[in-house]
Length: 305
Image 1 (cartoon, rainbow, N blue to C red):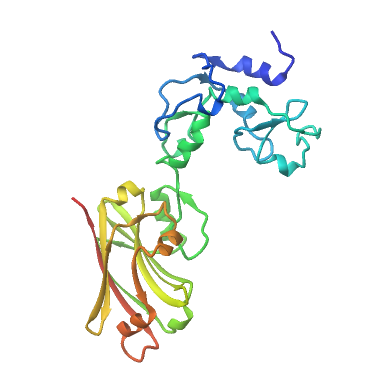
Image 2: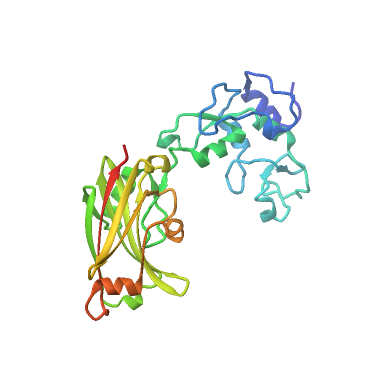
């Protein structure tokens, strides 16, 4: 029997209820989730494309979460976009008021949708209200470009990013677990807040990014070198690396665990998780009249047993 409301008539015609909804009135807790990174094992609703569209905000086109607002004609809108439309329905231009679409919120609690990263390999389906949490932790979510010399917005899986770094950023690529790099700058007094170099190493079937740059630590200019792992943090912990820099009979050494590129370049740098060299010390290592920076950084990467 038709309800007179086109939204709920459409829902009734397209949803096949497999399990009856629980009596719990708290819709956000109606579907317990033990591990949001794992796919659900008991689907509740078969979801058609048009039902998904009902849960899509007409302004930002993102999935809607409580509170879901509606106008007197039944058109819905997410809470984030309501202030942007100045209390006018973007569909019919009627005043929105403070009507909440509780029925649609409750229906959504029993839907299951595929992860948005299914094109990257995630095959799970997840309860509507835990899907967002899963996607924030999904191991298949794409990585951001690790290049620090520009605000690059490219994302993708590791093979794609390796090709992107080589072809678009012209990054030096090396094979092997040891390295010996020389960094030269004719005027070291002009390098504050400047990213210098990124080198990619391939070893143990993985890729690592070696960063070397200058930045301002308080009022003191310093140099930092650190390694990042092109993969997730749980894999990065299987590896260690060491760095060494020196000259004039002195040397500094650093040993650590590479950080995943899930952590931004700036986050790693600002946590000082690497070999830090004060500029005066760097110029001392360089020798000569201290007017030119000549640093040789050596190191190696190894896999923990």
